[in-house]
Image (cartoon, rainbow, N blue to C red; front, side):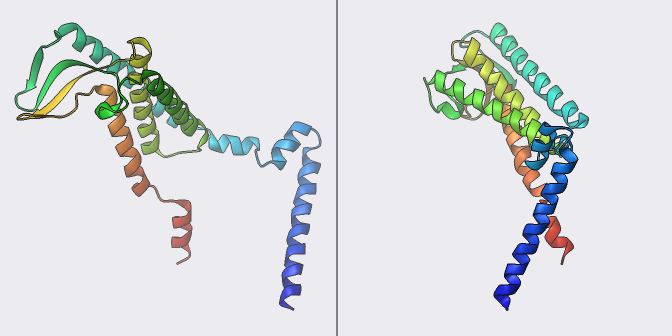
Length: 216
């Protein structure tokens, strides 16, 4: 009897799915393309729910463009006003501005592999845009993080593409004789963006967690 019950359940489920399929096909007959979209689960309503809304665009694009412009302007200003071996003290014993160029990634990784890093940065930028445009995210914190991340990637990608593969750095944090790796505004935006994404994983409740809590 249990096997029979399971078989009946499967048959009932199959009949229900078939009825849904028939109903979908009937409703979609006026337009074959709509029928195919509906059957595959991609309806106009579904697409609308996945695309970013107006508030998301107002967060992402100004942060991306503004962050990129700020990065490029600060690099230009620093390299025009500082001599090659000059150091301008901002906070004595903590922060100074210097001219430095880096043909690698963060902390000097992959030095001399400009083409590889340019390709990786381009792929990263496409991935960020894909997540923003297609992931269906509605969280303000995530959109802010993606905007900052995109600005940072674009800033260093610009240098690699138009500065002979060299990224311009000028911010030097130090304490005593210890100096942190020289960085730029784009690097700072990347770090803040990654930090916000990590924070969002703790602050944003997952659908499964919400469902479990409601049934306790």
